[in-house]
Image 1 (cartoon, rainbow, N blue to C red):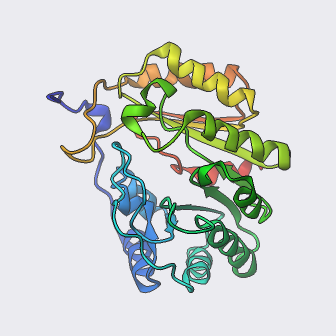
Image 2 (tube, rainbow, N blue to C red):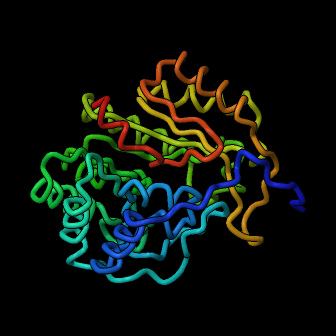
Length: 285
């Protein structure tokens, strides 16, 4: 179905060098996972070269199987009791200003991984108290008791991605619910009005401009502060095809619309991902 030639603006220049090898080695030594690698992120080498990485906790296997995502779906792994401390050690050794922590979805766990998120924040505060912390969380099935565990750990930024427009949820992420994800972000602001909230959407799956702007409106209606907007890139032939390559000019227009609607930070571009240059967030919080 997909026969489109990748446009020039999506061609990523290979990067490496000492910092990239340092990050890769550290992650391996501490038996950690990164979403950079698991999701086959196009910016992986650039971020590693800057000495940054987005840590993925709770194993490599996700209990959901979204049709856009390259993270593996399979039998969940046991939760590593040393994981929180090891993430904190990596954050300290990399001398990060801003640490991003995400996870696979763990619907199999009684707490769905909420306590592991809490432990990671606590360990980072212990080992690197100067670092701001961003958590990119699953929807926790909308369970507010579990959300409370995460929120009360006081991350600087609470990120939960919308991913796509509600009209495409059945096709793109059938195990998720758009309204539930909006309610997650709403609940965070109700509990902790001072906490920065963030979300992200990918384009090129068949959404219309009107639908995208309606997502912006839904996010601003719950006081979401920040948004990332990027191009969907097909991880394999088994994943959803790319229906459209969004031009840099279109991304710029979405950026301007989002700022006009009141978002305090907007990252919009073909290669933008949830945590791309997330360290710039620390300047705003």
